[in-house]
Structures are given as C-alpha cells and as structure tokens.
Image 1 (cartoon, rainbow, N blue to C red):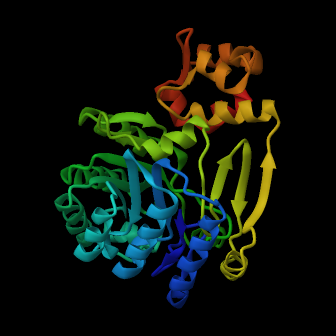
Image 2 (image 1 turned 45 degrees about the vertical axis):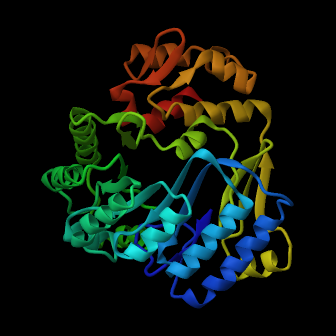
Length: 366
C-alpha cells in the first residue's frame, strides 16, 4: 500500500513521492478506499507493507483512518506481518500508538546514516539525534524494528560507514537493510553527478564498504539472507521474501505495482490522474503485462538468486515448469568454476564473491 506524501523529496529518491501537497491527503485516502473497493470483497492477506513516501507523515487521525480502511478490505492473518515505513522525525508517541492499535508489528525506519554530513548529501530532512528516540518509541510499543542504511555516499569514508553500522547495532534492531547508493535518472543527485557537483565513490570503495557490512553484521549474529538485507533468526521480512520468491502480491495506491494471477501491472504515478480516476470508480492501472512462461521463469531465477537460500531446483521446476539447468545451460558450470556461484546439486546460490557482483552474474546467466 503506497502513501506518497512526504515533508521533503530526498535527492536520491525515484519513488512516486509528493511533497508540499498535504491538502490532498484526505482526498487521497478517499481514492485509496475507492481503489480497494474494486476488489468487490475483502481479501485476506498474510503480510501488509505500508510504504511511501512517508506513511507516518500523515496526522494521527489520518493514519488511523487509513489503517481502518486496510483492516476493512485487507484483513491480516492472525499470525501475519504488518510493516509500516517511517522516517525518524515523523514518529510521535501518538502515531506509534495508532500503529500498535491496528496490529502493526514491524516498523522499517529510514535512518540512512548517523552522520549529519552524509544525511546532508542525501538531502534527508532528519538529524541523527532523531533516530534513537524513534527506535525507543517503537520498542516501547512492542514492535519490531528494521533500520535502513545507505553506503557509497559521496564524501563518506570507510570509517564513517563503520560508525554508522556500529551506531545502528547499538540500537539493537531486529533487521538491517544496507543499500549501496544508486543514481536514478532524473533525480537531483543524478543531476548533480552529471554536472560534476559531486564525485561518486569508486567501485573499490563501495566494495570495501559492502564487505565490511557482511563481516561486521555476521559477527553480531545477523543472517545475510538477501543481497542487501540482514536479520536475526526468525526476524526476516516475510513480506519482501514474497517478492524475492516471485510469488503473487497485491498493490494499491499511487505508482503501486502488483502481480496477481500471472499479470504484472503498475498504477499511474500522476497524483491528479490517480485521484480523478479512482474517485470515478475507474481503473488506475498505467500498464500491465502477462509474461510468457519462459520469461516468467527467467524473472523467477533473477529474484530468487538474490536470496542466500538461492534457487532450489525442484521448487523452481514446480513453480515455473522449467528445469533450471536446461534454461541456463553451461553458463552455470562456468560461473561455479569461476567462484561466483555455489552448486550442491539441489541449490544454486551466490558465493560471497558472487554477492559483490550479483547483477553481472545474473546477466551472464541469462
């Protein structure tokens, strides 16, 4: 469920985000309810992920209304996982109480860095001092905490990154996501790079930072269960594992994506168009496609290889109808011999070396 509203549009962000239009929040909630009503009846779900934008940018009463709408149309399984994304400076006690009252049991906090200079380059609105109090509020409510961090930021040193990891660990999160900075076309950060206003870190520096995260978090007991994600045992993101398995999921809201009955579709990213169409009872889908069976199998290979569990041959054949070795041929053997993949006969997974160049490995396989 996508909530696009933010107080500020960060320089690296390429999501469907809206800043400075808070007067449209209530109308957007009307539109979301109208889009959900097109289901015809409530759809029970195993996981819910409320992302953005910044869902907790909403006022407590607006957040309460949104979660009531979700409970009506997407009732959560009693043992389900309910995650809400938040920025540190948007989590008041009142908002955390609303989340807990509606069954949210996991908060994904966009910390990104504990260094003011790094946050400034990323054009983040919060200060490092806001992170720990936000974590404490979530903890007091009995909810799990996941922290997002970004490495490879211009001006960031290896020592800065180590300090970020250590400060994150001091807050004892259940889950950590470490993302290498990407320059998405059209974003302010991408434009600054093109104009030479900032100097990207070298690939060698980024690699050193990534390996430091793998080593340090591994030493502290975190499972490196996906390229960018680490968790204590039993605390993996169940919702995101659906994406990485290439299983079905719903998606609602501005720019939201869904994968239902083999059809992949995405909503419009135009807020005014979304509001107009949703409130008129019309489809808000911008584009959709139904992949051919072999394309779907290749896509499944791509996302499943991101996981530490990798691809399980028998399950892959059952899910896609294709035999993995017939799909990729001798390229698998070559990548195993080169040390990028491990193959025990049942599972194929990335080695440590392979994780560092995962996109290139996947490109070779395909």
